[in-house]
Length: 390
Image (cartoon, rainbow, N blue to C red; front, side):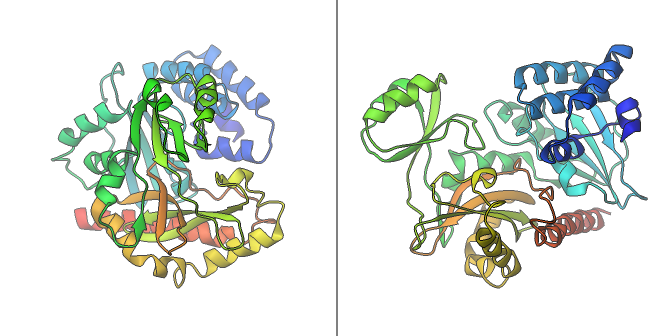
């Protein structure tokens, strides 16, 4: 890693986020990257790594400025495989924060997958000659900002000379407005509709309770449950955004009064467990669910993962199959729960959620083999697509 900091390659998202996750002081890394950038203003990899580091330290606006500098120098980046590559994967990405693109680095880290990352979008330099690649993966997630480039890519990739995974037209189906429409007829599935409203319209809503969040927000930023009309004004005082998504609130508490939220990955249509969060609060994020502090919760998550194929996946097989058929995505992340009448309750579907193996193995020993199953399935999907395209 010292070589990478000194200027011999890209560290990348997976390595930097793992360091942050482990509580490692990133200040010396940041200082070294700044020195690299000052010594060589054309060192795009230093600027890109520095942009990631700044985002991990919650300096988003500065980070995006640094990313812009990186992309003015270079729009193609490479994370080589650790051995002779079995697949050369070209990922199409867009400028933006850490939620903008599928974080493929976590899926291929330490493997025989060679990953090229090409950034495209308005104002970027022309696309350079592309490296030889076996597969192309559209890693751009759906958002208001990325919608135009996804629409343009849909036409550009129609006659691509190698297999294309996660085609743009299918990614566009994952928006909060579109997903309920495409998934409405999937058996065994419940997905609340999302209505896009302006600030003025939000103030006029009288049907409570409901869930509200700013447009293009993720990871619970700005997400709130409105239980009374009086709460709307207070929410708007804290949220300056001009538009919001509004959805009905569905109480998904289990019989013991706790909420359970699952992250499931569909790889080639097959579901895999990524994590399970348990909380006494309706808005669950794995980081704040207290999983580290509760052996009882971890034991339940371990059972969830161990029995997943014959329990959760089997119970919701129709729903997962229907989602894959309706959306047509090769790789998809689903945040979901179960309704009281046994349906799969889908909160969010996207291609940009992080699926990782960063949790400490001494506390979560069951996660290492589970995540290896996920990473192996992703690799197998790539190998299968390469064979079909050969």
